[in-house]
Amino acid sequence: MRLRVAVPLLVAVVVALGLLLTPLMESIAERRTSEIEQERREAVLRTADLARAAIEDGDTVPLQRYLDRYHALFGEDVVVLDDSARVLASVGDLDPGAEEVLQRVRDFGTNLAQLDVPLVTPWSADRVLLSTPVVIEQDLAGGVVVTEVDLRRSQRAVLEGWLVLLVPVSLGLVALAAAAVWTTGWIVRPVHRLDRATHALTSGAPVDDLTLSGPPELRRLATSFQLMATTLATTVEQQRDLVASTSHQLRNPLAAVRLHVDLLAGDGTADPGVVAAVQRDLDRLDTTVDRLLGLAEAEHRINERRAALALREGGPPVGGTSDGAALETHLAERWAPTGAAVTATVAPDVVLAVTVHDLVEMVDTAIENAVKYAGDAPRIHVSLAPAATSVAGEEPGGRAVVTVEDDGAGLTDDELVRVGERFWRSSRHADRPGTGLGLALVDALARANGGTMTVRRSAAGGLAVELDLPRAEGRR
Image 1 (spheres, helix red, strand yellow):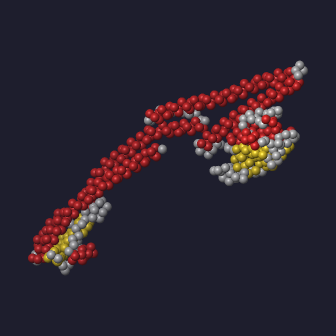
Image 2: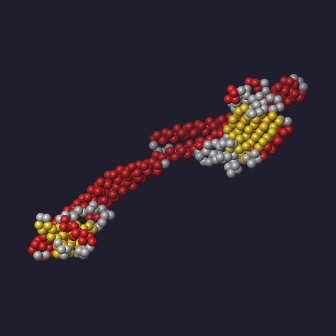
Image 3: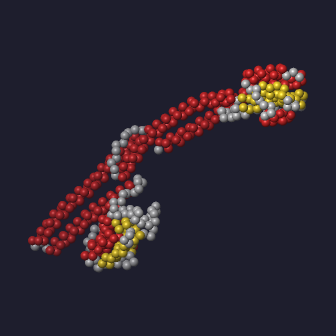
């Protein structure tokens, strides 16, 4: 995050400096180019004047002396040719027969001087030819002066001028980059700590103390978050302790009451009908406590799963798997002795990313619900098969459906909407024992395992409880 803040800032500064320095650097190069062009123009024109006098008088000595002094001063080569391309005077190693020189000779008859020096930069050509015709009469050239200008000194001068600009700017840019990185780190460091603390709080891990640093606004935010995290962690811990304590405190009185009722039933002093009614109520209360604790535990697992998914760490760890064969074996062992008409159709090769305990808990609870409310001697069918479609983001074939359906009377449309609400039961079943928590627990366990529960009408006439559950990876 530090680079995401600092890099755009530095890029903007570099672009701004580039826009500012480019005209300055061009100005330095243009100024030096203009200086050397002016110097060489005067020297070439002076040479042309001497060459005209030499052609008119037939005396080339003054011309040669001037060229010798010019060569000694600038170290540059010059050649002067007449209208027949013969050398009148020369200095240095410039070859009159070179292609570039011959091109200048061919062009001199136009009476056009070629005295422009291209822009001098450290990477431009280090030599350039200049030429001017030797004008004898107004429109007649009697020769040409060609000089090879050495631009290396000018290139060094341009480079030195550029360095005078670039070196301080570069040092300032490095200092600015260091200051920007330090400043952004000072600002972003508390954000990183808050991010780690948020992930820890989301996943239920302990939240470390946040070191107060950075801007005042972030320090206030860190202090507020620390207080919130501490309060939330304390509240969650108190709720867990309350559930555990409630379970313990309820079970002990229930066991004592049940013992007293059993003693009353044994000595014959109490009405057997009353004793039986009390025992049924105790069974119902005991079941309610178990269901509440199971529901609380399932919802806690739902929160853990959501936290793991929110952290994008591959999702919650899978605690175990179960397959069709294990479900079929459990149904035979659990329900065959009870006489309930429970049949099963399972795909033995389907492996669910759900523990056997959770799977049989959901299926048994759905079957118990059907046994209680589907009428006398209901026929119940359990099936396990791959899902026809997959949840968005999962691979095809990544889901399976467990269905528990019966042939009972079913529910009305208004009642179907409320199935799965806590403590809700149809008014038609008020005279039957139950807690109204069965399908709520099934729904919570399904969501805790990354699945969903859907209740609809069965083709047999009763209810169909469908559990859409994830399949184990690599076992599809």
